[in-house]
Length: 423
Image 1 (cartoon, rainbow, N blue to C red):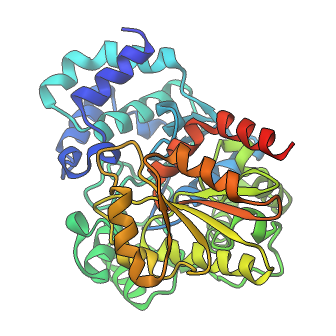
Image 2: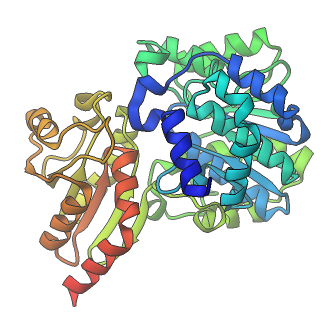
């Protein structure tokens, strides 16, 4: 099989959770442990840092990877989901895994894994761990897929565990209360391995503290007041990233003794995280005049942070155009109630089975005063916003990582269209 045939095989034989939801979810570590044993326990050949939490874990993972890269360490980075290309999930020094490596892994090991019927994420995680060993990385930053305790990344013994925060998301799998979800997140804590906590939520602090005591692990809670040391413009990176930056700085301070990372490197790596690691879809600016920004935040906590940023833009007197789409399995009301009602909305749906129909979204958010027209796909919605927006306006695209993925997949055509309209 060539690369595209291999990717199709992976998608069809082990459906992606991001595409079909619960049908692709497998609970437990049995398959992961069997795959790991078959591959010779590759994750034991390099140091790992495990990053979990409801929101921000992807950003913290990328910030850490950028810093290790600039510090001269060969750095693996495993994140999910991908937005445009599967290979985004597995990177070494910012470079995605090669097509040949993906093809070779499947060809070499399919006779072993096919009888196991692994999930897409189980197979992808095994591929990442094996690839990092082949590339002889010094350190790998491993982002938890979902939850923590039963997530298939949880077979590693890292040098540090990070839990960014906890909020209501994936309740059908992780629990219906903050405490239940926090216990799943705390499941990544290992015996004697230090834990960095990126939030001061009392429930999370208590639950993590109890688990850490059980595992004889030291917990350090992030100091969220970093105004004096913040090297980035929050209007450029997203206001919510300040918490993620604070968490990363705290983690790096604790890792200083083992890795010797200088403060000068930290500021520079944060400033260039997009170029160094390929970070996409987190308050990502795609164009000017009008400004076009996308962000894949989709649960209530993430949308609240986005809404605060958008309110700041309204205070500056800028007109907002919001292209919004969500997934059916999300708490739409909780996620959208905080969005500004003095923006023009373009309701749409992503090209995945889990997408909530645009018309349904339009009806459900009308209660909050969010008004706008429906569009059958992300491209048509963004084009409509570009046509209506003046050069001084601000277009935001979000509500779902799938909406952002569709935008980025058609980025070149949309930006060329925007340039043509402004000329």
